Image (cartoon, rainbow, N blue to C red):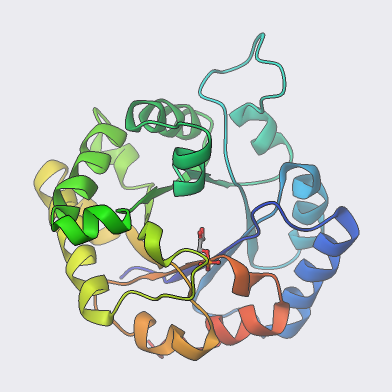
Length: 253
Ligand code: 13P
């Protein structure tokens, strides 16, 4: 059985004191142990501090990006080993904001996934179509290409460590949520892709999250879909009470 995962992507928000307050709020507000994995992804500057605060809790910590090389002359970049060193165990890779603003390609996503896995970080690999691609009707092909190039040549053992997040670009930060039918359709296709390209075991063990305007008001319906194993939450994860409500809206298992 897949343990559900709720992750908060704080994006470029939260100073160190704000980050500490937020993670403490989540820690205090939840009754542990819950039957769920909770992950927070602060900016790099508060990664270590948040990891320290989260240490004696069930909250795991994620980076929002990683460089694709082990180390070297890459001014301003952060290596996978530094993220591990700061106490994080996950890393978000290929978020649409990085694809859009930093020209990240599927090939680069693949390099980042490999370096993350080599350093024992669990990648949360983001895929999703733009509004134009949705309207053109070829969104499944777009997502399958993101997966086939982004996850190219991974062994089954490594692939089973992945988390995939389906985030339709048109639903991010817009308040526009995909319908449950749209979400379940894509999640089913992602699971079928994993079964075909890796194995049934990989397809059964990889968590597929939904992201895009998830909040307490809509999370219950989304999280009860059979192929949705959790959520990658942006804006609504910046407030501990709202984030906890989303975690609590998971269906009982
Ligand atoms: P919002 O929840 O703010 O739409 O952001 C979603 C997202 O991009 C999470 O990675």
